[in-house]
Length: 175
Image (cartoon, rainbow, N blue to C red; front, side, top):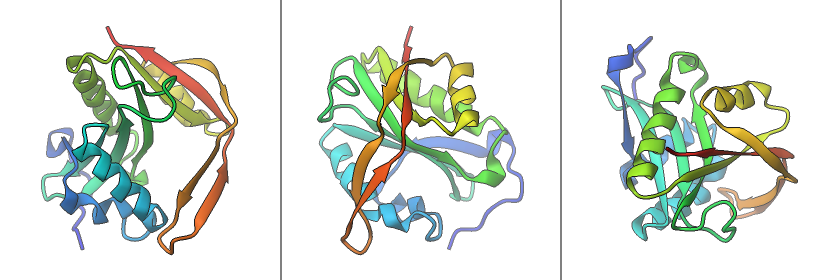
């Protein structure tokens, strides 16, 4: 079990790419254990150079944020492996929100993508998540369309879960 600092200061948080040992921490003490297979599958894609998993940690290694990036996937309009990458599964623990951690994570990811020749970041944000949409707009993302939001995942018990989350497709050009 990780120990959480009460209120870490900005300089007590660091953003790094996840390691295999971080996979269990991505579950946030069971809250996201239903995504266990997705976390493991995405980690395997990191080893193939097709994805990245970024985490925000406090100095005592308490994971407070996570963000997944698909560099190349089955939908080239989202991630084509050359200039376009797709951000998903981005979250910051509620107690640590509105402290600049999310912005720091996004800027770190954008800089890494830019340094690796990617020029467009895409993401989907649930149409009902107005706060997240405003957050992305503050960072320069713009709505380019909508997405029906049909997707599925294998839960921790091995059952396929079907999701329907209508979303706004957003993009940002990296300059």
